[in-house]
Length: 302
Ligand SMILES: [Fe+2]
Image 1 (spheres, rainbow, N blue to C red):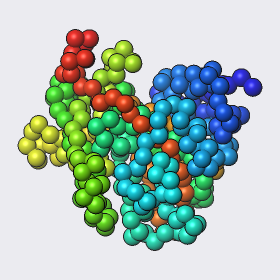
Image 2: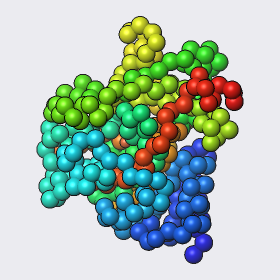
Image 3: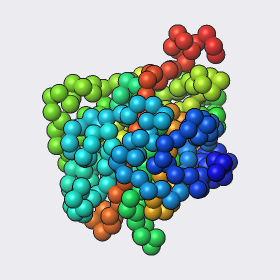
Image 4: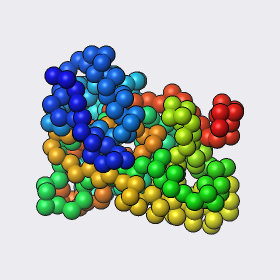
């Protein structure tokens, strides 16, 4: 059957029905999906039947699998993360369990693995257990950073252009103090990195977008601490504007794929002790730094 998609919103997202992501993909299918994600930033594949292995296989069509920084804490296989408040044995985890605390941190706007020097490109999230329809929360929300940048005033663009944010995996502990300390080797494998607040996309005609997170730090650098915190707060409010967002209401067995380079995402908080929510994620590793407008490769092209 010919692959086809339908638009979800004008600025984010398509849905693909009648396609089996567990099979071996041919070149034209991979190309169709690549073009689709480049144009729409988000794809939902309906009615999938996946496990860790087939999800890893599907993910590898688009690059190399990224491994999670903390060994054996949230998953069976390090390349497939359990985004879940359910243990591998199927037990509903208590709300103060470290695996649940990590899920809570996902309710802050972020892009996956921004704490890496080369952050992730695509994420693939498969819904194995979802909240019942009457439950509040549990949706995944996305905000379009190309659009958010476009809509900034010229003054704001000028203010933001030279600024950076520090992204630190260890700082998740500051936001979720119940998490256990990282080991020395986990810490040294993931030292803090900085990324420009405005990134440039050579594969999109050198368009600019915003790039920041609120799950690794709550400050912007290059100004006083108070100013940096105020600006960060302002950015969080600004990109939460529904005009930039798409909210994904999960159906069981949805596989959603998104482009971390141009979208931020967060889970809408839900009652973690009352409802089970189990998802697995495959992640396509980034191979390039986040290029800001002042990098040598970019400045001559602008
Ligand atoms: Fe995430």
